[in-house]
Structure formats: structure tokens, C-alpha cells
Image 1 (tube, helix red, strand yellow):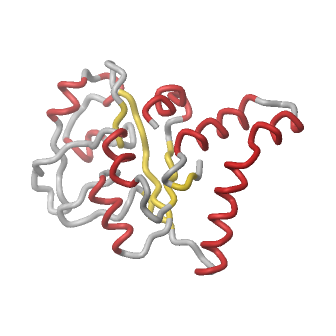
Image 2: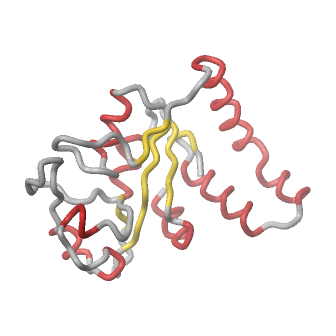
Image 3: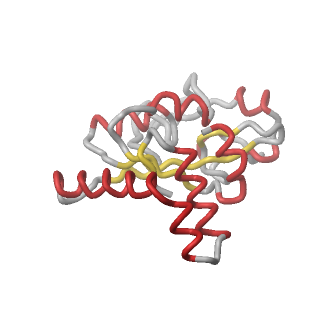
Length: 171
């Protein structure tokens, strides 16, 4: 899933159409202008730079945890053009920027975010690169998208294929 940061919901919808639509002529008609606009943006970036740099889960280390606004900001400061970030959902339906199944490593939790209530997720605190507990937990998807909206970057949302409808509603 690749989208210019100003058109998340449109590209998410495109992804659903690509997965569910079998009629190419209908698909081409539906995709229309906005997919072309995003492809033009990517082609322009490739002409300008020749290679686009992607940062998997942002750029983290030191006191910056993965899949956070801070790791995305850091990735842009390091010259990334594309920020890959993972999305998961808790039991209450709140979407978080996190790679499910990494809760033990990142938070010392034996429970996965999809098994937690919002209050439990909001109470999580990550570890820095030295293993020290940080004061921040996982960012919510709506906060993440709001921060990167209208910035010159491409966002690649991953691991949210089973919660597309919820992601689209936030985007």
C-alpha cells in the first residue's frame, strides 16, 4: 500500500478494490484520476532522486521506538522518502501504529494489542535502545496520519489487511 500522505483513504480504497474486484475495465474506471495522480507523484520523485529511500518502521534507535511519529520524523530527517509503518487494532476498535506480536520486545508485555482494551494499550511504555523504560507508548493511527498529512513523503501502511474498513474510517 503506497499513498501520498494527503490521500490515505483513497489509496486504501484502491487496495480493497484491487483485492476484491475482478473486472479490469471496472477497476480501471474506478481507480481513475487519483491513482494516476499518486503514480505521477511517485514518478516525479523517481525522476528527481532516481531512487526512493524507504524506512522500515521509521528510523528508530536511541530513545526512539519503532512505528511511532518520532521514528517517522526521524526517518524524514535522515532522508527517507517512504515511511513504512504497521497498524493493529485493540479489542475496543482503536487503531495503533504497531507491529503485532512484538509487544514482548517493545513493551515487556505477554499480551498482544489485539487482546487488550484501550486503557491497557494506552498504559504501555516502550523500551529505548539501552533497554530503559520510556515515557511513551504506541501512537494511535489518527494521530500518526494527522502529523504526516501534507508532508512531502509517501506512507506505506502494513499489516492492516484484515482491518481495512477501520483504517479507511480513520483515514
